[in-house]
Image (cartoon, one colour):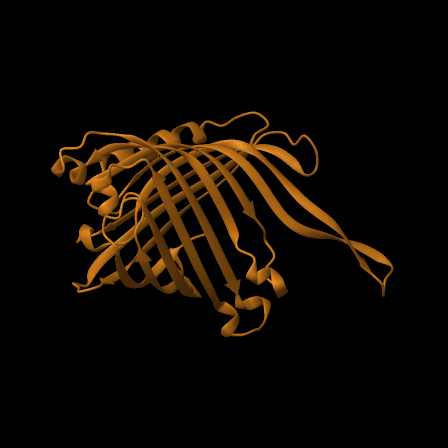
Length: 281
């Protein structure tokens, strides 16, 4: 916990002093709820998040250098039953937006068509499971594709991330129990996110509903055979969530979420249901 809080402070302080021609977009979020893992018990859950994106002067209308920072802390009273991880991540790289022209025949005019944005980043990351018994540090090259189209066939196209880099074990109770020291390995990982906002299809109460899904997967090469036999070599994580927008002081939605999987810093494959309220941008 202390390491994550120090990472959060180290990120927030420099950003609060940003000056000059840089543009800074940042947001804090939190989720409060009850989590029900496989086999119980039901337990309180708190998730804190911080995301920031800072860009310098645009080289053109469609390209720029960016700095991205993310922190997520997910806490439960029974850490060993929580499938979600915590991490602090910083990246610096280049992103470019792609667009085309859509001709509107009835008015003889043209509209900009958004094809999304692709980014290339150097990435440094600290990650841990909820009991902090497994802690990793990594340096990666990351490719990101994102878009803001939420209608038609675009609903099938996820926002994606692919990363390859070196991961180092910073602390590991499993390695200690096997008399294995800290090691560094090559890791490939991917992430995909889908978001469907029903306000694009309906009005009234249904329009306040949103549906989201995510997948995360990884494969680590060069692990000790003992660790590979325990499942540390590869894994998948799945999450699905339904939210409903509300207007309440410090809260803007209620949600129900299901998550299951095994992440690089999570040695146990487990699942959990969660229901609660949140504040997010």
